[in-house]
Amino acid sequence: MGREQNSAIWNAFREGATRPSWLALGLAIVTATAWITAANTLITPESVMDHASYYARGPADHAAIVTSRALRLASSDPAERRMIIVGAVANLAGLSANAAEQRLEELANAATAVVDLRYPSQTLWESAALADAAPFALRGVLVLDVTSDAFVADIRRLTALNARPRLGCRFAAWHEELAVAGLEAPPLRGYYFLDNQSFFLARIPTMARNLPRVIAGGADELFESETTTADANAASRVMTDSQSPITAAESLHVELNTAVIERIARRLARNSELNFLLVAEENDLAVTSHLTESLQSIAQRHDNAHYLAANLSRQMPAELVDEALHTVAAILEQSSRRRGSP
Amino acid sequence: MTRSARVVGICVQGLALGTLLSLALVKLSALANTASVFRYEVF
Image (cartoon, rainbow over the protein chains, first blue to last red):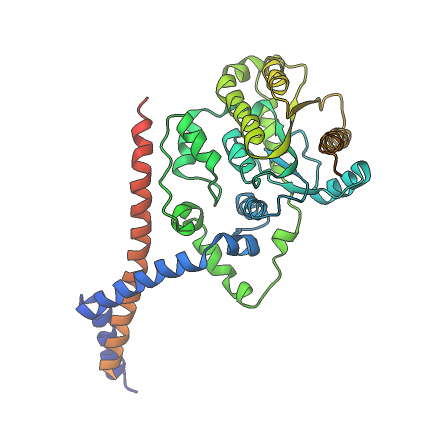
């Protein structure tokens, strides 16, 4: 093939690719329709539940993994007893789901599935939304792991999360929290992909990269593995600890955030048979003693709520985890006795 | 041969424009969603 012929072919290709034509326009419309239809058909809650690692950027993509777990929880059997843990992986950073399941079985003499929905810097609004993933009438305990870091979030943070949610699922509580804050939730269109588009659009390169592995039927090892977010969380705690207590106290939005916890307790009592265990940071800093009272009063006001003080300056993390599991087991036993069933 | 190359070019143009169009449509619907959010940022 001569150089002239090559050049003629290249020129013809370039002309076809660059000159506007009705055929290209028609093809563009067909392609756009096909992409949007395929995304809405293939990206479903079921596919996210079953193939978390396809959507996850890696083992540290906690938002994708927690989304998958929350969707699984939402479609789970409410008859099975569960311990659900939400929050920012703080006081109970050493807790792992598998070990907790085994320990709870020893302590409570009954199987209790542990669902870990924590990730670093989770706001209380996100915790409220994730707590709402619990199916109606579910039995068990919802544990909220909370430190003073969670009280730094303000309405601007919620506004940013509303514009670009980190999670790929929306539960009723999320919309309720936005409405309480005076924000308007994006309307639900009934198409999972479109309703959670920012989550999926941000992961297009990841999905393209992971496609061959999913087609080859690779195991969903990310979902099966236990993700602990202790390292990332430790980094955020070091940042907070370096602040002076006065500066930190000034940056807290106590009323705004305790109201969110209050609504979590109320929602749990209304929608499920879950007990609420608040594991709250307590230490000698003025900033946390200021919070303690308001958090304890939430536990006192609600029959389904319990309070556990977490003082990591006096307790080893493993001791605190064990104490929390003992408390969960006691709550489970107490509620079983009340119901007259194991 | 040149005719086939031109058709391939048109197909490439159509696929590329279609992909961009689908992304633009999805993004546009997101912009429509967040318009209400910006309204509340005023206070």
